[in-house]
Structure formats: C-alpha cells, structure tokens
Length: 411
Image 1 (cartoon, rainbow, N blue to C red):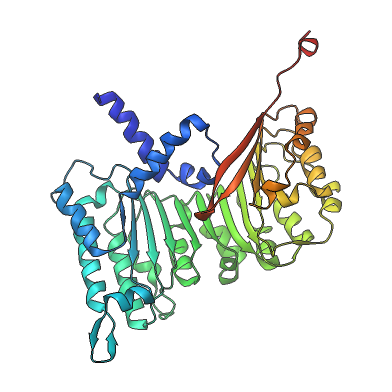
Image 2: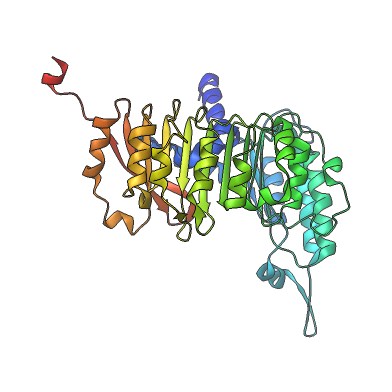
C-alpha cells in the first residue's frame, strides 16, 4: 500500500471510531450491500483495541513493542475500550480460595490498573476515543479506587474527542468531594455518552467540567432530575446533537425549556405512558433548527393523549430544515404519524423505519411508496432490523429509492 492510500485508510478508520459526528450517527448510517463488508472489516480492526483483562493489555504491549512516548501511532482506530473492574462471575473465577472462603481479587484489579497505566503512558497521546466499562463492584472502597483511576486515566489522553462510559457506578459514595475539580483539562473533548450509566453523580461531574465544549451529548432521562434548567443552559451552551434514553414527563418538561440550538434530537425509548402534550412541547422547542429527529420506542413506552391533535395544531408549524426522520415501525400506522410526515416534514430526504423481528413478518413495503408522491424531496426509505447480537445496533434490511420519473412525466 502506498503512502497516500494508507493515509486515506487511516483517516477512514479514525473517523469511523473516533469522530464525534460519526459515532453519534453510526446506528442509522445507511451503507450499500457492496460497502457492508468494508465497514465490517473496519469494525473488526476496532475490536483489536478492546482490553477486558490485564493479560490482554500485556500481550498487546509485547506484540506491538511500543516504546514510551513513541511518535508512531499504534492505535489505528484511535479508540480504546477498557473494562475496569470485574462482575461477580469474574470475581469468583479470579478469586483466591482459602478454605471455604472466597477472597475478593483486589490484586487482580490492581494488576489491571497497573497494565492500563503502562499502556496509556505509551499510547495516550494517540487516543481520540475512549470507552470505559465499569462493572458493578459491591465494595465502596473499590468504587473509590476506581474513581481515582478514572481521574488518572483521563489525565493521560489529552487529545481525547469522544468519551463513553458504561455502568458508571462511581462517585456515588462520596457526595462531598468535588470530582469535577479533580478531572483533568481535555481541550478537544466534544462528545460525551452516558447512556450506559445507572448513577448520575459521575455524569454530572463530567458535564460540569466539560459541558461548555460539548457539541454531542447522550444520557438517560433520569439525568434531568439531578440538575436545574438554569444549570443545563449554563453547562451546555454549544450543544447541537442530543440523545436521551427512557425520558419521562419531567425530563420532557425540562427539555422543552432549555435554550439549546439542537440540530439532531434522538429519543431512544420512552418512560411508561408519556403524555403527548409534554412530548410535543419538547419537540416544538427545536422544530426550527432540527435536521434530524429520531423516535425509537421500547415496548412499554406509549403516548397518553392524541398526538395527531397536537401535530394538527399550530404548536408545530413544521420542520423547515428536517432532512432525516427515524421512527419505530409501530408508529407508522398511527394517524398522527401521517400528520407529522406529510404536513410538517416537507423538506425530508430520508425516512428510516426500524423493525423488530415480529415486524418483519407483517410489514408491507409497498404501502410506503405513496410517501414519494407526497414528499417531493424524499430520496429513499430505509428499513432497519434490530441486530440480534446487539440490541442497541441496527442493520439495513431493505432500501426503497425514489422511483424514476416516467417518460410522460419528464416530457
């Protein structure tokens, strides 16, 4: 491979795994069947930089032979995944057994931290994306140990652009410590994903520290219960892409009163029985600026009230800039969906429909062809299936492109 081709491939790898825009969009970025193999190989390369255990880190260091502060980049994807801590099964598997007693393997955790610091001292400057998986650890003292480890780790990745944290069961036991003051400066961080967290103390500390520079933010709906509208406006003034999971009416009420200039708004699951009025008020807040809207529901989330009534009123005159709409299939037979699609989304170029395994047996693709007649700028309709191996991911099932104009129409 010549040097120019290598630069192109390296950039593709880095953008796919570490670019805030790419990471935020990836779940519903349609690719042709021809290029699917290409992207699957890119994902396979990314998996080479996942480190679930200390021995995996040690093997990587030995095989790559990285020198400290090496100027050459050994992380082709620019993104690392660390799984910090062990769940109960791993504890038992790695524990030292004394008589009939199982001794927690703190030494295993310490060894992992040591290997992690060793690796980051060598490659930290090259890392743009970081994924941290915090398994639940039952001992408070170990939670504190991992909290300190997080501060140390982030101090080693000064070029970080994207940060995603799973199972953030940390910082909850030390409410009086100002963790946001201990966190290091990360001047390039613009994307923060906290949707895998069950506790909000860590998330709030991270937002207070880095919020002013974030353009992409993802969280659980419960996050809104830990801060005020005033603080949300002050902390996230530059936000343009926001994703929220399992939001309830309280979160929707606060979302409707923030002063964010959002271009992308993603609802991934709703809390049980969300009032339609709260949902519409929140969406209406950003109607003028939205370029993309996602509405993906879980089985329990449903609207209480008539969405069609709200869409037919002047609460939302329309979405003048909306290009992409992503919805769950279960919404597409609702009367409010037609009102939304054909009265409010006249600039739409892509409609994405997410199917479940059950939906694939009943979906009538030909029904959707009428959308091309009513929406003059619609270019294609893309159907997605939930990935059986990863419920948070989707794969393209079918693509319907705008039918070509007939000779009579062109005349």
